[in-house]
Amino acid sequence: MEIVEAIRARRSIRAFKPDPIKKEIIKEILEIATRAPSGTNTQPWEFFVLAGEVLEKVKQANAEHLRSGTPPNPEISFAISNPDTVYQKRRVELTKQLFQLMAIPRDDMEKRVQWLERGFRFFDAPVAIIVSADRLLSEEGPLMDIGAVMQTICLTALNYGLGTCIEYQGVMYPEVLRQYAGIPESKRILAAIAVGFPDWDFPANKLESTRELVDNITNWCGFE
Image (cartoon, rainbow, N blue to C red):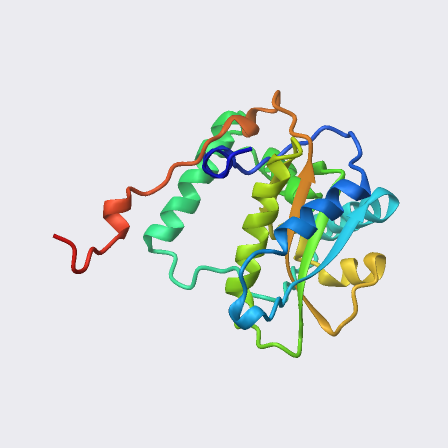
């Protein structure tokens, strides 16, 4: 797939077919994606790729933690410090669009919880890539490079007919991942990427989220 086409085509997939993905394909995607840039070639990323029984155990344990009211314990913060911002408004608008597509009424708390739980189950993807960085690095230092490699994974996956969703619910209970995937305490768990063949009949997968106009977010300096 041509690169500009891939960038325009990429979207967050929130439901996948159960079809398994060969290890060799995921390895090829990671080999290509790790050509992503990193500051002074530090390559601060490390991956734990979950599938099969291991992934199913993580999905189940995450859902049980959520349902039991266990407080999330992410290893990096995902919160917006000031909720009265355009950033929170964009988040709320996305949620509204998803709930409309999924026919989830605002006051139906059970359906809202069911929807939330999907993220903790990696949207039922057959593969989840857990992205981590060594604790020898600062918490903030590798995040720019991590973002670059995650985007590159998502774009590369399109070449294999795969969809992806960068998501954080799946890493909200790091103790679950450490238990079932053997992730050592020396690694800081940062994010997850759900990977699989998209289920295009699923309503939420029809969402194409909006983007701010470039002129609203760009300052032109020195151009005539």
